[in-house]
Length: 363
Image 1 (cartoon, rainbow, N blue to C red):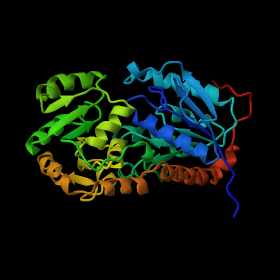
Image 2: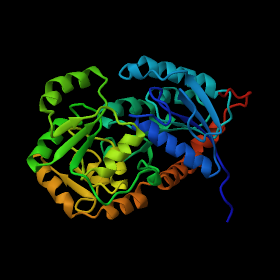
Image 3: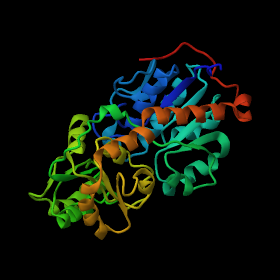
Image 4: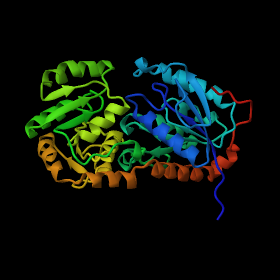
């Protein structure tokens, strides 16, 4: 059986963090892992991103010398990034563009190659962006829960986010704390994690980003008053600290108050042999195997009992579960299938399948 020919893929990352990120940056972590695995499978990847080069991509095109991290909530950096990518793309021959940004797909109709978009956000916000684009973009959901919220859009696949499982340390023996890891934001509700940990009689460590105005306000008004000797905040956790905290925790507490499209930290936690206690919102019931790799409950007052019940779960089962369902290989296979499906469609053939070749501009 003949192996399908390798593809030339333009991978477009968001501009706000490096790829991979040094701390916060779930989308950038996913992009980095996908790029490296696609290259390992023989594809040629041209990564368009900000900051330093950090992946195995054969070509790296820098759109910002320094990522505009401090402007994370502003639209202008996204628009500037999209404009720069669009101009730079014309210097490359590609089979398809895989876009992970919000603004980039708005120019997809003018591209000479098909555009696949991974939708990383909630459909409550994004359905109105993608619906007018129709078939100009082919959408990939990161969870079935996300896709169900706007089933009429031009979805071509659902591909769960994956991680490099081997890069996360496995520990069967746990320390005497539970962990919250994420944004200090009302949607993530770390105050609920503190309240649940106290009811369960266990110490909690909180690591997270606090840079946006809403996060600062929430931290001051809701979170800071709850901190104490049994609820300690350690700021943003870089890759090494994040892994150490995840591996040592009794469980990760994930008390989301919004329709989380995926929740990569849940997978990272389970890879360390650490179960997840989550509220049943968004993709949490899809990601966590209830009663096996954690507990997904309906109400905040049920979190404390679930924290205690995690002592009955097998850490090795958590690791096996992630290895079988959320690996980089599983994610890469899902995207390869989506790429082939889109490229085989009549619309892709009519578009000509590639940009006109010009001398490459790489950094």
